[in-house]
Length: 72
Image 1 (tube, rainbow, N blue to C red):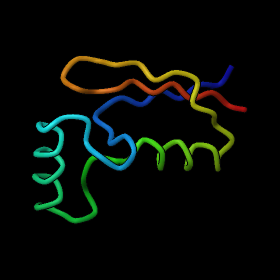
Image 2 (cartoon, rainbow, N blue to C red):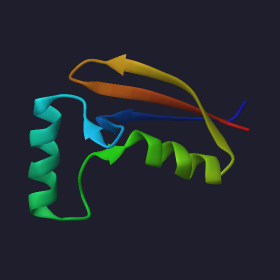
Image 3 (cartoon, one colour):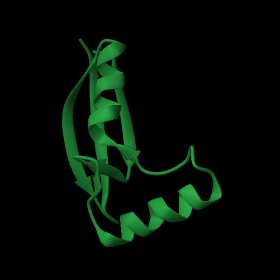
Image 4 (cartoon, one colour):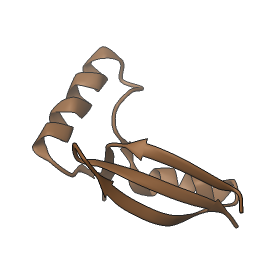
């Protein structure tokens, strides 16, 4: 199986999952508007465009997620 694993904070439904993630997102975007916490659904859609399917979303410490994608 070909897998890709990504970890970090993500927005879910376009919203940060915690107030601290919202502050982190604002801090990143204040440095560069291209930066910021990515939206989980957008990352999933981009992966789908490359033949990857989200197989697992695991909660990690510090309000992060571990995303496991697998080649379709």
